[in-house]
Image 1 (cartoon, helix red, strand yellow):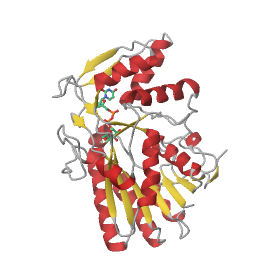
Image 2 (tube, rainbow, N blue to C red):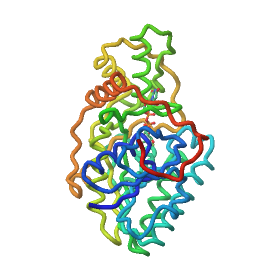
Image 3 (spheres, helix red, strand yellow):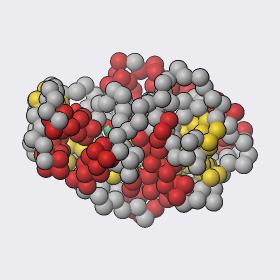
Length: 340
Ligand code: UFG
């Protein structure tokens, strides 16, 4: 049993990581300011601190065994328009977390990194040795943190694992994806399917870019199931070794194009959603597909879910368990406590 702080534990990925850690009987505390997360996504048994990352030093103490660090700004488009939000929100805030971990001798960290650190890496599967050339400030901010962790491990003995996620999709029971604003492909297509099914007027879902050098002209991504992604965090916590920083790509090695995702959504939902072809979205690389060989070798992590299963689970989560309303952002801030 470990005592673990999960930053960003009220978010789409964080809430599933928290649920899986609780199932493994770990003691879990969540640090989340609810700037983008949802209060009702935090599992009941977790202790919750509604605070910004920079105040991690007020929550951590020497009794913690590990931190899983997912709190971040994560929108490529926003990072192009407001890069300063990414330098402050990701780099500066993470430095405060590392300072607090060092101060309290918390020995392990699992960090939520991203395929966006590689930028436009070509069409071959991306390994951890592929050159990192981010094409947007979001990816650059995550890459800077990866460099911080390497130095922290070498200089101060931290045991760190960076997990570079490729595209995450699906749901774990009722825990699904509902960002506001929602920019991701699969949730946008499922919203269109709901509107079509319910006979409502809706703006057709958009395909951003049909002139990419790919098999059907649309961008290709490597989708992994949220549950399998969460399990990689549990394995990485067990693997983290003092004085080392491991970097692992989390993907399947199989790419799916935007058009193929649209077809899969039509097939799973049975709804003939309309789509509109639009210009490329700035900052989007044509192809992002991972080699998962290193994660398989070091963690024994082998993702198996297919895109149709991810879409099915996301669709089921929406149809059966409508998400609760997000917590009002400027509600009085409790210092923390158990939820529910
Ligand atoms: N897309 C559309 N229509 C939409 C939304 C997206 O065509 O309505 C396209 C995008 O242009 C892209 C693909 O679908 O080509 C996937 O887009 P997402 O927004 O779902 O995901 P991204 O690949 O842009 O981003 C995800 C994470 C980022 C991370 C990136 C790289 O959200 O945090 O993967 O790993 F940086």
